[in-house]
Length: 227
View (cartoon, rainbow, N blue to C red):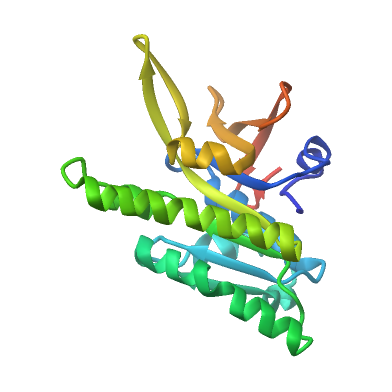
């Protein structure tokens, strides 16, 4: 996976499993995802980018492309998802497209980005509808299981953008990514983006599931993305 900066690529030199990026609203998650998609497409990789926002992030994409040629944009397919069930259905049927591309010897898919995985999921959660919540959790688990299958079977890299969740334990509030135990089970590398006391400065915290080491670095978030 080609992350926004060389420093990040060095910090995450070896990747296993699914990768998530999470943080509070407006911290730069979509910018991070778009930069990753562009850098992957620029070297010829095919990218499928799902986005759940009502409007396509065209202005942000335009800012990132100001210093770039746009010839490689044909390598990215953007697909808007309007509800969580639609995301579940599309991911569940995506293998047909993958197999068809392989059969027809078209360029294979290299990277799938979902921006955002749990935004629509959280909108539909309802504390008074346990059956619906059970179904949403089932769908979330199946989406991540299917994405993991794509990674293991076809070598497709997976980047999911996630929302920030605050939880309390022993009267202590802590921040984690949304999706609870389901996301914790499937995600191997998590990347948290935090604001700092300096405007446009961001702290990126990298944690791998099976390693004790936590990597922290500071980056500047400009109109041209993370630097």
